[in-house]
Image 1 (cartoon, rainbow, N blue to C red):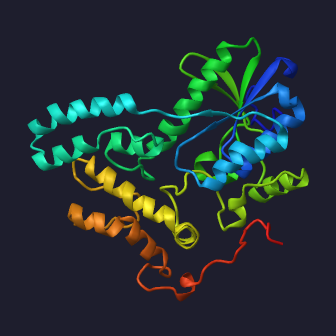
Image 2 (cartoon, rainbow, N blue to C red):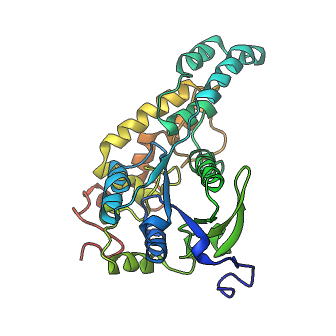
Image 3 (cartoon, one colour):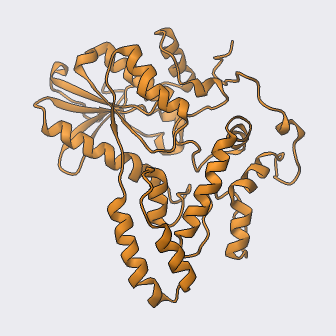
Length: 330
């Protein structure tokens, strides 16, 4: 264990006195982590929690709320961010400060008409911020997942005498930012310290899938429908293949993105907001930037070959009923 943790300290208390809290997203990595926790501690010895962002595929919602709880006979607690207070403060700011900054009256009126909670956590976050998150400013993870999960951990730690461990489905080969992640690490909530445990840190994506299949556990059905990751749907970091798969299989999500862009634009000082930031050429006006990056432009870009200037005819062919890079259709 010490070697896997690069020589850093690991917990020394008896593991029978530990309470694993598994963060479950509905993806393969958190599934593998959940299986490992269950095999060690059993159903009554762990807690499982998921953060509902209100921007997931319905198949993932069904998988988290019904498929996995029913398969294992467990309860999955759900946490969800609420931005009602932040939106209320933003209304006051728009009413009192925007006029002093020379913001046109029509934009102020539009923002005030829009700055009301919708009940959708992701959309309310964007209304409050007046923009969508991006690769460079990825506030969605912090606001929709990290903060609610941290509050949940705070409550669990305060209610038990056991040593709480936050089990996370993180792998080192996922990204450069996770390449040096530790198997064991001290974390903290607002008021409490606890151990963070990442039991699958050295596993590959294929190993994780094989592990779940070896236990006979159903994987999220999105993996058989061309998706290689599960989470926000869509994620602001989507690439061409993901946007194209979205266009072919879930056109209703494209329609929802159009409506969300309209709403967030109305809540923005600039009056413009796009879900994707795929085309960042310099020298554009705000209107030109919006036109180049709105959801329909992103879809058209996804239909092009490398370089983004020529349509790829193969992109117009609907995907196979089952398509998986993990061999789930074999």
